[in-house]
Image (tube, rainbow, N blue to C red; front, side, top):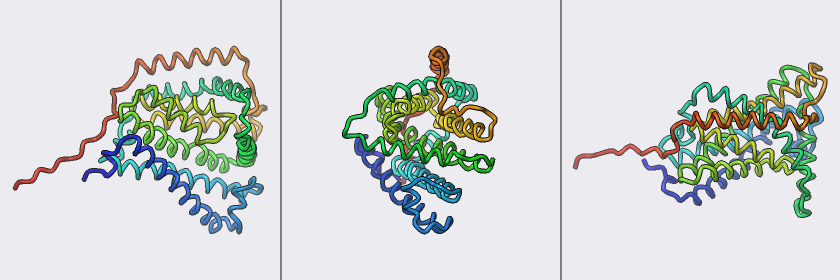
Length: 310
């Protein structure tokens, strides 16, 4: 059977892709709110979502909702849309190809080195004035920061695991499936220039986070994740890099909360020379990645042709 979206133009596919995403986000948000009341006994779930979690129960409820929305919105959209577009979901999302182990090791090293450059970009972003028409983003950013602070205020190991799953494991899988596997994969299969595809997927990734003060840094991170996806031909490499980036944040916060490290790394600033050295080393990693580039896997799977005798 020929997938119904297979022969649609790229523009039509992208419009449908984001329509399905918005629809799934709305549906699974409603489901999550309903389940929040059932599982956590919160009478007004919408109030919790609109305010800062105050109690451990509210924090757990918030994490639960985030997990449901991320899985239902990004992951379900990716799988369902890929099935409508291709004869093989695994091939369409590049799940069935595993990059060499050396690429995974280098991806982890690269993302660790990139942390210094990312912090530099965050600082640079704060120097860019926000247009008056977008001032509402400041309130949104302040609320998001307060929510993150509340969620990250944990000391028990069990809480650390729960937060790591919701803020590192699930986003790495769900967001990479959508932004790289589905969105960027559609661009590459349509023979869009790889550089344009990488930059575009990073930009959409950044805008979706609605964190104006981190937009440039998230854009750069998204572009690097897209580069890893393209250079390896496998979604797994961007999974690992995305997970490493998010998990590092959670781990460092946990170590600070329990007193293992004496400074909150979220508030730390690095000397400029360390940033420069990290950029040089990161550029070296990119050079090696280019040497290790895998064969192009961004080709549409061909449907099986059934021959019948008249």
